[in-house]
Amino acid sequence: MLYPASEQRTPAEALRAAGESLDAALQGLEQLARDGGMLTVELVREIRSQAESSARTQKLILDAKIEQRRSALAERLATEVEVLLKGVFEDLEFTPEQMRRVNPIVARRLRALAKVELPEY
Image 1 (cartoon, one colour):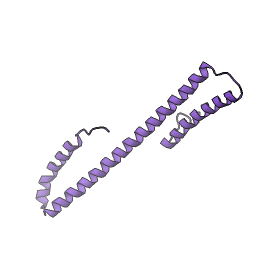
Image 2 (tube, helix red, strand yellow; image 1 turned 30 degrees about the vertical axis):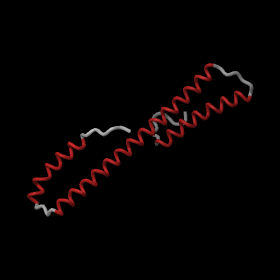
Image 3 (cartoon, helix red, strand yellow; image 1 turned 45 degrees about the vertical axis):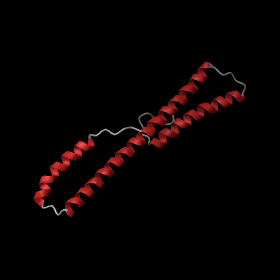
Image 4 (spheres, rainbow, N blue to C red; image 1 turned 90 degrees about the horizontal axis):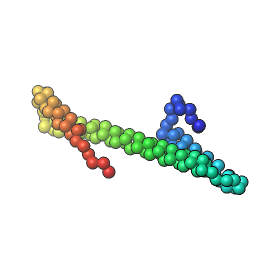
């Protein structure tokens, strides 16, 4: 095992470990063929297991990166909406009293917007 189970890895480290594990299994198969060895059912199962593990790890890492990007995009969009609304209220020259009245309305509408389900692509 390249990394102890209790050790935290970055996505790049996990991906590299999965790739190295699969590569080591394939190199072992190549060496077996060079040495004229026999391919056993157990060896094929082990290589298949390594390939499946590598694929699962890669998918998990890609999914995690996509979720991180979605989260960062949502945060950026929230900031942009806040800046836009402040600009609109300033341009309209809202008084402090008007701002106190409009803030809960805007907050309620934004919460409703945040609940909207977007389609997956």
